[in-house]
Image 1 (cartoon, rainbow over the protein chains, first blue to last red):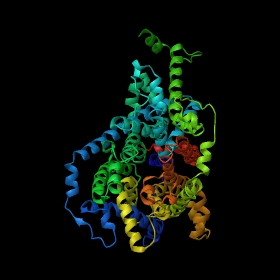
Image 2: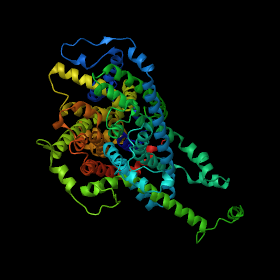
Image 3: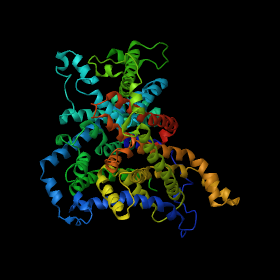
Image 4: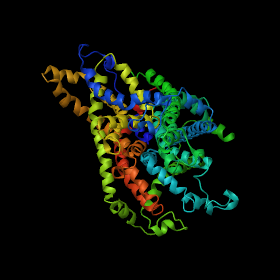
Length: 332
Length: 306
C-alpha cells in the first residue's frame, strides 16, 4: 500500500524554486538561537522513540535468546547467545529458499512493473490527449485501491471453482490451455501463488511508473526525436539513444523505490496465502512476522535476525537512493 | 523497402489523408490504450459488481461478466449486522477514523514545525536530520514490527498506560511512520514561499506568530492538505501494525482488520467481502482523484529533476 501513498509523495513536492541562489541554507537569524532545534524536537523525539530506537533494538534482539517468555512478569532478561540465530539461519536450507524466493519474486515484480509502466507511459504519450486522460483515470483506480481490497479481489478472481479466471480458463478450449482449470487451486504451490502475488503488485504499481515516465517524456525536447528520425533511428533506437539517457535519473529513482516497496510486501501475501502453514510460500517479511507472532513460543530473537537480513538488503538499496538524492541536491 | 524509401524521400508536406499504414498504427495505439484501461479498471469493476450480485449468482457455476439482478443485501449485511455482539461496521469505522484523523492531526502539526525548521533555518543538525528522514522512510515497518511491538509492550508494563489492544499505540506509530514523507513534502512548499514576503511583514511590525499564521499558513495550506491526505491514506490502509497491536481486542479493530470476519464462521462470504472492500476503497479513491488532479500539473517538475 505504501506504494500508492508514497507515490503521491513522489509527485507532490512542487519544485522548490531556488531561493536567491543561496538556497534555504541562507542564514536568516543569528545562529545561536535554538528556534530550529525547538521546531524539529517534537518530530525528532517521536521518530527516535518509535522508529530509530527499534532499529538498535532489532540488532540487540537478534543476538539474544528472546522469546515471548521473556516478556512475562519477573521473567529473566534475554540471554546473549552469540550469533546462534544467524548461524542457524545460514545453515537452514529453508531460509535460503525463502531468501532466494524473495529476491526472485522482487526482481520479477520490479522488472515487470518497470517494463510495463514504461511501455504504457510511452503509449500514453502517443495517444491523443483526451484518450490519454481517460486511460490515466482508469489507472488511478488501480493505483488507489488499498492493498487489502486489491488482494481480496485477486483472491476472489483466482478462487477454485468460482473465480472468474478459473471459470474463463475452463471455458477456453482444452487444446489451447489444457483442462482441469476449474478446480485448480492457485494458492497452494509457490509458483502459482507467487504468480498471483506478482499480478496484484504489478497491477497496483504500474500506474505510478507509467504516469512518472509520461511526465518525463513530456520534459524531453521534441527536437531530439526529430534529429534522431532524420538520422534514421526507428522507435527502438530512439528510445535507447534519446529517451533512456534523458530519463536515466528518473528510471534510477523509480527502480530504487520500486525495489524497496516490493521487498517489504506483506499484506498481499497474508491475504493470498491465508495462513502460516505453508512455509514454501513465505517471503522474508512474512517469515519475520511468523517467527515473531505466529510461532509458539513467539521467537523474537530469530524474527529479529531475519529482520536484520532484510534491513541490510534495504539499506544497501537505500544507500544508492541517498546517492541519487544527494546528487540532486535534495539534502541541501 | 521501396515504400520506406519513397516515404523518406518525399518532401515533408502535410498530408490531408493519412495512408493506410498510419491509420492501422493509430488503431493499434487505440486498441493498446483500451487494453490498458480495461486491465486497470477490471478488478475494481469486479469488486463492485460482486458486491451487488445476489448470493445465488455468486455461488452459481454459470459466472457472468455482468450481474443479472442487482441487490443491496451485501451492503445491508456489512452496514447493519453485528459481527461480534454489539459491534458492527460503524464501530470499526469510528475506530478507523479515530486513528487516521488523530494521526493526521498530530502529524500535520509536527511535520509543519519541522518543515519550517528545515526550509527556513540553517543549523548544525540540518543535513543529518534530512538524511535521517530519508533513511527512516525506507526502513520498512515490516522489519521493525517485532522491536516496535516489544518496546510498546515494555512501556505498557512499566507505565501501566495501555498501549496495545487499544487505539493509542497504533495512533502513535501511524503518526511517526508518516512523518518523514510529510516533512519532506511540506519542506518543498515552505521553501517555495518567498522569504521577502515574510520579511516585508516583519518590517511592517508583524510578530513571528502573525507572520506564521497570516503569511506562511495560507500559502502552505495546499501542501498541508496534500501531506495530510497522504498521511490519511497510509493510516487508513495500514494492516500489519494494526494486526500486531490489536491482536484479539476485536472490538478495537480498524476497518481493514474487520474484513477478516467474513471469512470463516458462515463460510467465506464473498459478496460481503467485496461490499466491505468497496466501502473501504471509496474514501481513498475520492481523496486520490482529488489530489491527483492537482498533482498532474506539478508532476513534470516534481518527478523529473535530471
